[in-house]
Image (cartoon, rainbow, N blue to C red; front, side, top):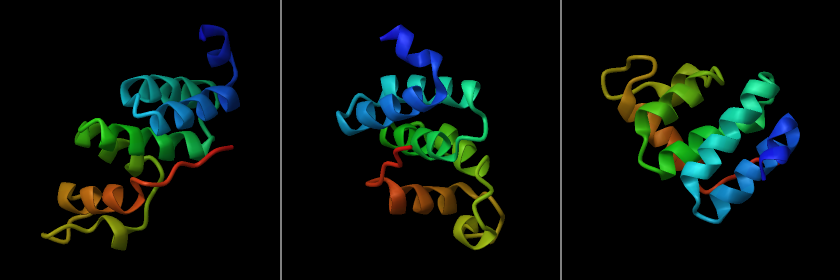
Length: 102
């Protein structure tokens, strides 16, 4: 499987498949590799956030979604602070059932 991670697109799609198989920690690894190889690959960042959320790594999910520049209205939390964790958890929950292939 290591040779698949040499291409950003393949690594992103591998991350999506692993997430669908509930292998979230492996999905996180593949998504991070995809971002390393192709930093502008938005679906890899989305998949990273989703996989982190599903693995219970909420701070990492927040960081992945923040890297996408999610609009302020979506991330405003209880205290109306941009990036407030409660708001980010709501965003993650809204898209937790979505995977974005490339």
